[in-house]
Amino acid sequence: MIRWFILLGVLAALAGCSSAYYGAMEKMGIHKRDILVDRVKAARDSQQEAKEQFLTAMEQYKSVVNFEGGDLEKAYNRFNATLQKSEAKATEVRNRIRAVEDVSAALFKEWRAEIKQYSSEELRRSSQRQYDATQGRYRELMAAMKQAEAKLEPALVPLRDQVLFIKHNLNARAIAGLKNEVVVVQANVDSLVRTIESSVAQADAFIAGLQAE
Image (tube, rainbow, N blue to C red; front, side, top):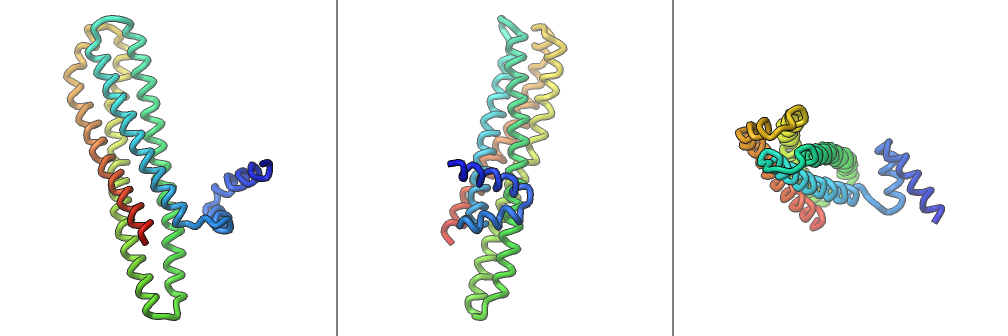
């Protein structure tokens, strides 16, 4: 058990140096392709969680705008806490995408080098075709993920504005004046949700294709 914890500590330290980390994992029988699949799954799940978090933030924002009595400050605090969680999820999504890019760069670099090592022209061409197909699917995956990532900040900006305004205007009359803002905030969140759903579907397709090879 102690050795296992020591090993985990070493791997965590090596994670800061990608090539050393991948080399250590390779010696344990965990290849870059396996790591790529795991990281794409993590990025997919992170995006899905971010989608749910933003939908929750939107619902809480609506509940504050449609305030009909009770403790307005408590409603604001809940909304603000949910926004902070949305911010954290957005950061997690960005980090997960960077992790996918890191291992994919290492994998494709290794693959290109290994293609040159074939003595059989037929096997070299076959590997090149497989490489090209995987690269094509990967480009589609990253385009979808980057599109979803690009929608995060536009969805966060108006939510931040609303939280800030409500913080300084904790009265029902001022809050009621925000009802016209709901449409704009909702549009940004809806756009984010759609792009995340597309990115998640692309991730599933990429994983399926990679595992079928």
